Amino acid sequence: MFLDFIPFFDDGEKTQSGSIDSVSVKPELQYEILSVLNSTLFYYVYMVTSDCRNLTKSCIDFFKYRPSSDDIKKELSRLGKELEIDVKSKTVMREERLKTGAIRKVEIFSRYSESKHIIDDIDAVLAQHYHLSPAELDFVVNFDIKYRMGDSLNSEIED
Image (cartoon, rainbow, N blue to C red; front, side):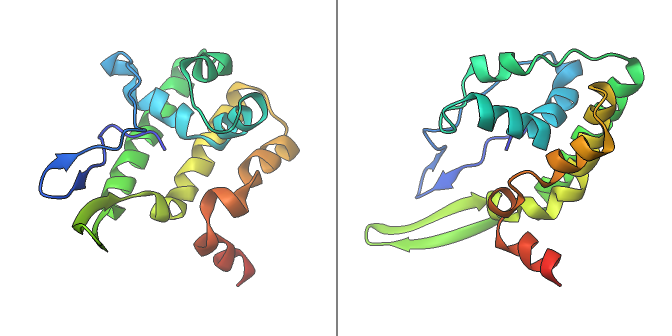
């Protein structure tokens, strides 16, 4: 997940995961790009074109997002802000007990499925941009859903 803040661990000193990196974009493009990078369409392209382990600058560059209209840019920016607010509102601090002591960490990823409706909206905008058919959009929105969104979303689908 791409965020405009860095989750941290706290074992007496706040630190960030060594696997987290940053992507620099112009401030006025921040939420538009945040939308694109959090889309299922980006995830799909990443999964079929990469080693599925290391997200590199070349993976991001390969996606080749170039906005086609101001309406698309504005809507993606709006949805990026909405996603960021939604994710932050669902972020919780969790404490784990380890042999070496307790550690507190920001928990985001297990609650990612709660923001799926916004990600689906982002994919719908990108489907317009890339001229995807309804069947192609349906494929993208449901791609790898079981593994990407986790058990909580699967139980909602089965109900």
